[in-house]
Amino acid sequence: MMSVYAVIAIAVFFYMSAWFVIASLVRRNDLADIAWGLGFVLMSWIAFLFSEHSSRSLLINVLVTMWGVRLTWHIARRNLRKPEDSRYAAWREAWTYFYLRSFVQIFLLQGLFLYIILVPVLFIHTSAPTGLQAVDAIGGIVWIIGFFFESVGDRQLRDFLKDPAHKGKIMDQGLWAYSRHPNYFGEVTQWWGIFLCTLSLPQGYLTIVGPLLITLLILFVSGVPMLEKKYAGRADFEAYKKRTSMFIPWPTRHA
Image (cartoon, rainbow, N blue to C red):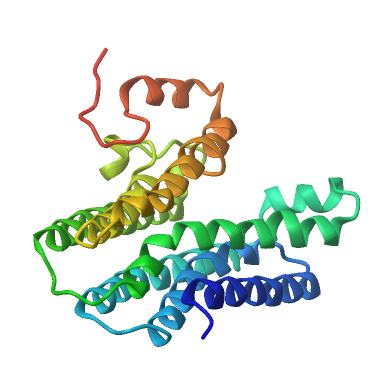
């Protein structure tokens, strides 16, 4: 019988390939952002169906589903009201062999990241079922903290941007007064919470590759650096940087 890891690898390939076809037809590669969260939900439940069920695997799938559905809805509602995201639009103009690069560099690469980040979830599904332990509760609490920061941070930013009086201003209110990226902090924290749940299983620590990857991507590749670069040099943003923690929420620094 094919292993769950192989099943999910094949499923991720076809899932991202399908989104590439749709994106090519409608000329919107930013659909990859919508596919991201939904992909985790779908793969988690496929893995659940191909594995022995346990209270831990069901708990993990509920957490992944809450995260993925909320994120997908948030991004879809934000992106589909506007033209294609400027990053993807710029690549459309700049890239030679655009469709080949899009398939490999956007959709397949994102599928690879999805698979690696999902490793803790797959590990839980493929491990022998055991009862929940204290470390699972700790992981759940950490996840709830992360979900709070991501969901509330996204909502606060959305409400801020909807107000015409805030046009051109830097968001520095609510959670954003304590972290320049509270939503990213929340996303990373949720995956560390899921990782903690693997520590109640033998060799669960090996799945640390998942939360490490999402942390590195957000801190050094596609998350924080892209947004910080967009506002770099603005006097109001530079002042905001000086008084506000970049990532981990922390009290405001005063001059």
